[in-house]
Length: 178
Image 1 (cartoon, rainbow, N blue to C red):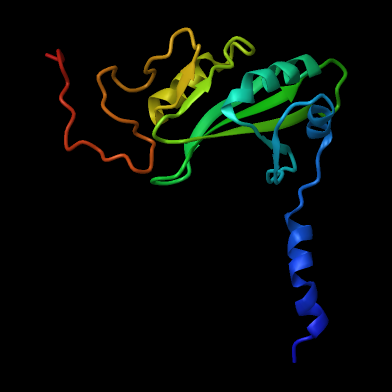
Image 2: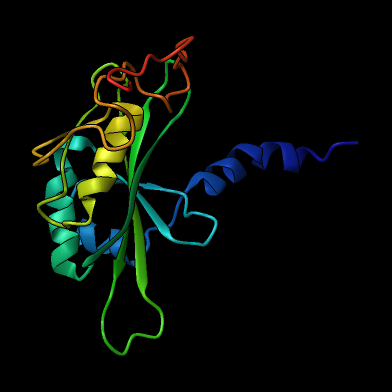
């Protein structure tokens, strides 16, 4: 026998489960007028913030001013054939006499047919080769990057090898290898 009260409360329970509590970084961004969306925290409990490509540089500049002075990792991934590409940023607030570094993750979802996003190289120089790798493997174009070119694949390689809809060529001819 099913309890009627349980069935009646099911939509309310789903809504409560879907609400993501704002963390300290998101609260600070909201207080200072920066447009963003919250995602569920990652498996370590680190805040995840979703931002549109247009607001990436202003938001990252604000986070840098707020103390997030270290870009631990920048990367990308593919959500699947026909779906979006994601560029992500793992930021850390590094300071003296800090027992536990504060962290935040930023994700930018991009259309696969025109994946343009501003470069954060001018905020964190560590983004240089990391953005180049994301470009090389996924075809995400980081506008304003000083040297956006392939870093792992040969310069004449066709396609983006880590996209889930990538079709490997039957062969790759080495030119000038003899």
